[in-house]
Length: 261
Image (cartoon, rainbow, N blue to C red; front, side, top):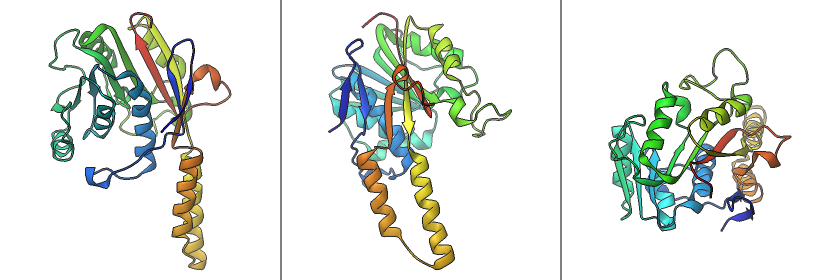
């Protein structure tokens, strides 16, 4: 299904051109942000077989439901939104998936419970992110793995005085993110997700311009071009940062452990 490249040193697969399928019955939409976000779950899916998984800030659980397909022992998704959890329970009926209401910094789980903890686009929304990381380390087994992602400030807001996303409380540069994680975990490996959203946006702008000025509707061609880009390039490509030094990734992904692989 996925075009994947093996990294010999870490045995972590790099995700290129994820071929994703979408089911409108589960309440999700075929948006670019959805496809990019699910790419991180594609990346995480290689870790989950026969493992106890915790997905912090899971929303309605579409990512949790995705990794539940890869034969984990159990996937527990936690989110502070009662509405999101209620909606997720209505749509996802999977035996190894449980969705719960909870806070990212004070979960109700016992110490050393989970083999894998994932949390994507969460840490930038948390004021006390140090407490969040301490909570992750508490509930994660000593031999467990934490997979976390966040927008890269260098590519997202730059060095503006204010963040472009008003819901972000703290955006990290690559070095800030690495140093923070290293203060909590013994081993941290950074990856970057390259985003091609600007291509879709250019197509959208051209479509609107043609319709506004000439009343020419290219909707079918637009959809075809979007499908082609997704098949050829993919919504999000994840590589080790060391292999994309000349590119500033839109998102940073880290794989953190307390002991070596």
